Image (cartoon, rainbow, N blue to C red; front, top):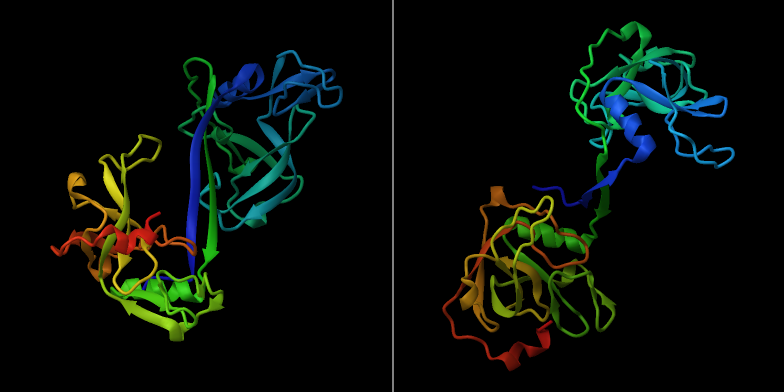
Amino acid sequence: MADFESARYNLEYPYQRTTGPVTGPFLTALRDGKLLGIRAGDRILCPPLEFDPDTLEELEPDFVEVGPYGVVVNWTWVAEPTPKHPLEEPFAFATIALEGSDTPIVHVVKASSVAVMARGLRVKAMYREQRVGAITDVYFVPENEAYDQKIAKGKGDVEISQHLISLDYEELFGPTRRRYLEGLARGVLIGQKSPASGKVYIPSKGYDPIERVPMTEADDVELPHTGTICSYTIITPTAYYGQKETEPYIRASILLDDSDDPLGQQDIRTIPLDEMRAGMRVKCIFKPEAERDFEGIDNRWGGTGGVIERWEPTGEPDIPFEVFSEHVY
């Protein structure tokens, strides 16, 4: 049985930006195995800034190589890295005072264990084998764990920086939605019948939205697998990062028999586009139990995730529009 405690989401998008006259040389140097600072009066700043943080005056791009050694000023240990962290194994985030720099840099220390980490620990910059001109090209290790590297200089300057912004979050399911999902896992469509109005809602939010009365497990009802197409949209996929769809398909709202609330967000891919129409009678065919997934189902909308394999016509006569007109969105 699937876990119906919560829904997990990932919002993600890529973007790119130009690096400019200061960040560009800094990233180019990282790709080539060097750390650069910038002169600001009688100080060296690393990472380099475009302006003096004290006077706010623009700085000339007068770069100075710093490091590769430094000393840990303070640190925190990451025992369980997430996919968003720069290393897969446990590591430390540390403030590091680099040799030749008057400002510390916050970066990753790849240590063999947490016991190695300490204030005053001497570390050395190391570089990944595959470098792209990003801050993650470099990391630090304790001096006694360092080794010599031969870094090949890359071609050209790093003028564009690529980024992937993402956010993971989790939403707990309410008890009514959990029972709805448990029903889908069994191949059953569960709605709720209002004790006040007698109307049936699927999926229910646990209350009658019109009469404003709560509904409990005692109000659960099992609905047929047949219904009527009351509205639909033909979706033509647009190319974008991560897009997997290539062919037009239908997304429909289906008024199940014995229900007073359409089941929305139903993808229909086996009925030809030119044969789709409001009023068509259809029935759902569930996927084999082992193949059912619940991605995309949350506490708000009426989707069925990857549980239903297809909707197919029943062959019955169409239902007149006036019968279901109040359910057209």
